[in-house]
Length: 86
Image 1 (cartoon, helix red, strand yellow):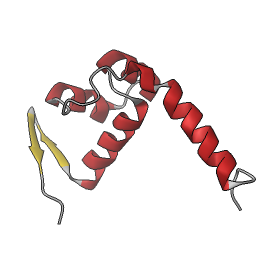
Image 2 (spheres, rainbow, N blue to C red):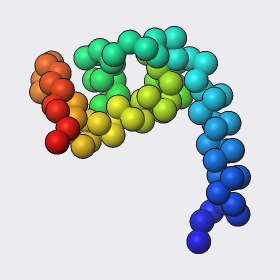
Image 3 (tube, helix red, strand yellow):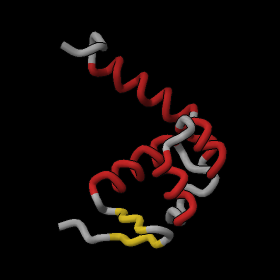
């Protein structure tokens, strides 16, 4: 059983949440820098605060954190490697 009564309600809530925090995304078209990925990897502040700090949307931060977890972005020390998805 889902938390929301209807999938449309869940999608509407998700759209409201992400659109509210999309305003901080001033660098949305630029690739992520190493320093930004290090902030994302630390995960010591909330995603909304991090969004304001680095100028990315909350959605972009969560996707980047997933890419680090899965292994698409590999951070080794101060180096950033991007692996091809097979």
